[in-house]
Length: 92
Image (cartoon, rainbow, N blue to C red; front, side, top):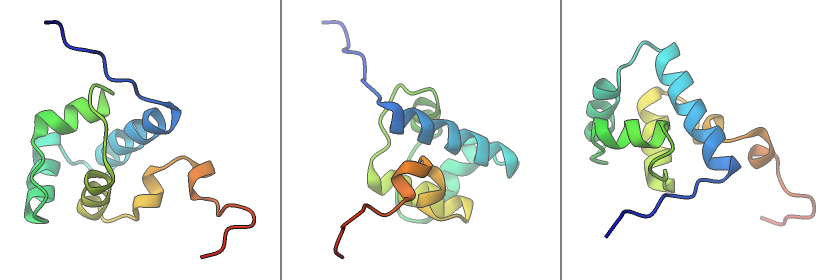
């Protein structure tokens, strides 16, 4: 049975690009990022990171938080600006 293609929306595409861009800007390889994420008790192989960056795998919230922490940034920095802005009328 052939594998179904993973559907990645615009938020996921933007996030994947941000993960790769910020990882490269910090001079961190996918293997190094995988090791840093594993130290945070979120095992994620370098292959999984590659698939996230190539939009072959979705990045769930736990992955996003661990990747951001490993890169020393806020998870919000990985999301598109429209996701980071508070919703009008939102009550927290």
